[in-house]
Image 1 (cartoon, rainbow, N blue to C red):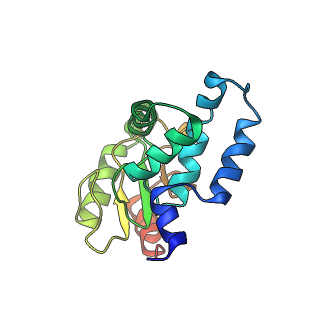
Image 2: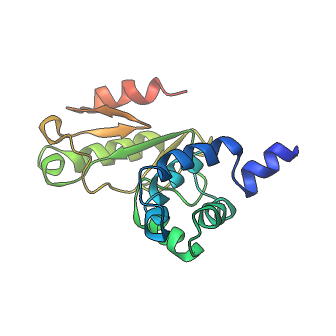
Image 3: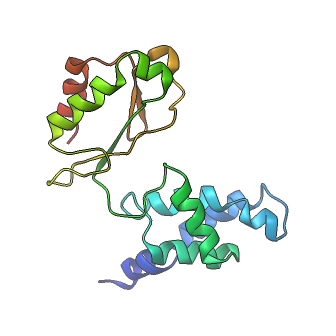
Length: 170
């Protein structure tokens, strides 16, 4: 493993530090202000860590923001947008909140689980897709039922539409 790869696994790269610093400029220059940058910092690190947050990388964020590691873990485990274990190349989030539920989200979840051969929270054996645990709301109620695949919204889902979307994932 090269030293650059080691730094990505255990610390923050210079690019990550620069991105976090850009966020830090938006907040007061005090401990509370530095802590306000934890969510964008975790997004940056997760994006550069294969889509999840290894503990060592969360520790690096805590060190950089001068926070207790436990505070960073609390944020990372509270928000569904963060993953603290390895995930597939693609993340599929199906909304099951009230609007989507009333328009068939339960059937959509059942279809996707059957199609992929996994349950919510699992990853396909080939590491291609992680079916995220239910989301509270993905904010596309007028297009219910809907899902988020990586960063793309898909609305007005049907089993046929879902099959096309999943087939197009590499």
